[in-house]
Length: 194
View 1 (cartoon, rainbow, N blue to C red):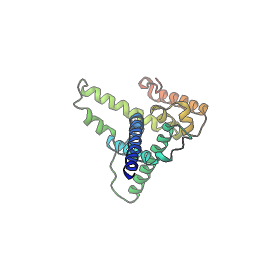
View 2 (cartoon, rainbow, N blue to C red):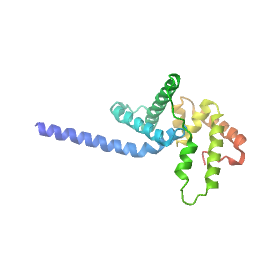
View 3 (spheres, one colour):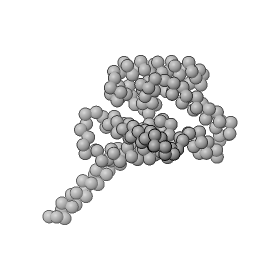
View 4 (cartoon, helix red, strand yellow):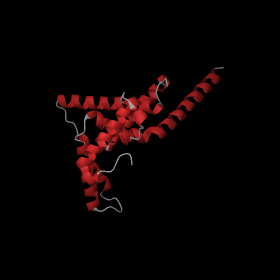
């Protein structure tokens, strides 16, 4: 009798691990891109993604299905991000050394030996990225948040739920963001919905 129960427990755990593996495979990319869009190093983005999925795994049994799984995972990821930011601010206040997260260093070192790309192409790409990040930083917080969600692959309805707003408000924010980015970047701007 005890052997049957332990076999059943193993089956349930295996099924749970298989289900989690499918969830992880389906949502890893968007979560990782969300963290990368926060202008942190790839290593820290991986660490935060791992932390987010650990919390998803731990909280999966309590998931009630009131929102889609994708939105719930993003909310967990967003809370991981907020915790990370709070921790960084606390370390700065305490005078601890906090690493500077310049994407430029990572990008150039990762791509210096990239086949098919010359040094000029890499520098132009880096400059475009710097200009885009500067233009995005100039947007109001809610507008910037809306753009980040759209770039992470979320649909208007999902963004509206996450931002606790209407779909029309999301569309308006994105329209205004496109307009401002075109003004700031001119021909260098490619639409994020394209």
